[in-house]
Amino acid sequence: MTKMTYADALALAINILGADEKNDEMVNRLNALKMTIEKRALKAKTAERKPSKATLENDKVRAEIVGWMKANAADPMTSDEIAQGMGLDVRKVRALLGRCDAVEKVKVNSKLNKWQVKEQA
Image 1 (cartoon, helix red, strand yellow):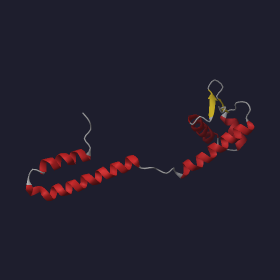
Image 2: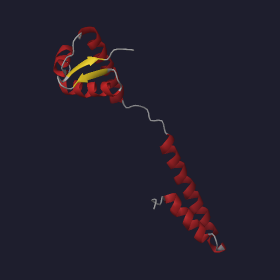
Image 3: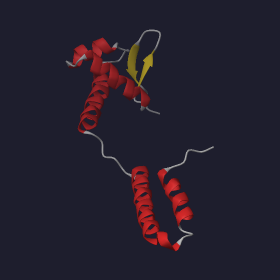
Image 4: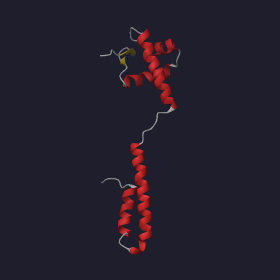
């Protein structure tokens, strides 16, 4: 059984109350409420959310890390070495390298726990 939404519950109430003419005002209000709920649900599904300030900043730092690695790291490096070379916090570098790995800019050698820039095809 699927979960009943507020819009579904209102539609059911409208159908039940709609049979009696004494309830016309209530049916009209319930219809207006149902339309409002449906509009909000549609907006929430289709809304384009702009990136946060932190996300924009992290994107810049991530690009700097990848650029620094291309320029300075012929061999795979640990996140500690990258952080020291760039003067950044090692925890932030690790987190951003993990995100870079997700978007396929760098790769990690899990046996050595070292990072390197992926070769462009």
